[in-house]
Image 1: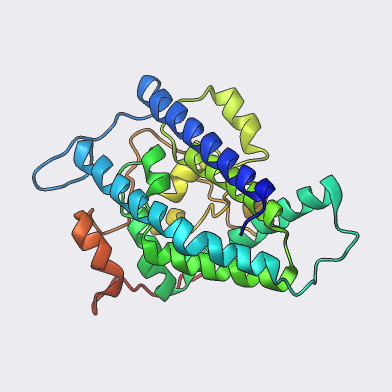
Image 2: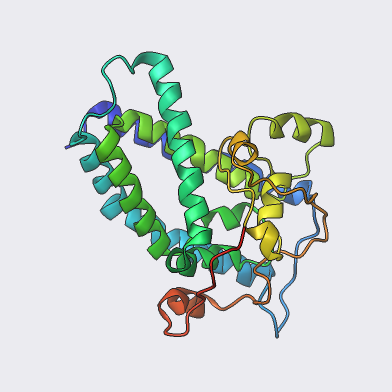
Length: 273
């Protein structure tokens, strides 16, 4: 059984993320940074079909979260090996937990691009030919399960409290929806935000359909990891830049579901750096 405080955190998390998603979904349609795509018979890139594909992935993961992801995370937090020292507590400890978890997810995201077996699943997210808030919901269930297992291993090893994990996941979801959004921001505001956090202009370059840009800008919450580890792209976002995976096109929902398991799946060689 979960304690009332954890149940309350989960309720707040769901409410805050839902409101944020709705606000940015409406905002990017009122103030778009780039014109939205439209569906074409030969290329199911945009329009309602695109929204339907992304919503379908979201629905699958909404089911998986309470059935698998949350129980595995809670178990790992309850059975941590205790490498997190006792003095690492309070508000400073919470802030340190968030920074460390973001550092670790930077490397997990980078691994999803550099390890071919992980790219099989992560590529489903990148095959979207446009970027908006719904792209933040488009992750293959295989990637979600692999991420949950990797996160549980880290939580078990270090001993992160569940409250820290839930706070980080809330911030992570808010950040992911924000930096995938098509919301037009004042350039001066976005430049200031980009000094600390990942903004749409940074993450749009990560979704640029050019391999060198796709394999860059791995940060999720804080922007300084890419500067620190030399993975920041110098490409500047343009409203007309091609989004997706270089040399590949968008697929139907059914084909996206089976894509990672295909014998001739989307394996690609390791990036040369």
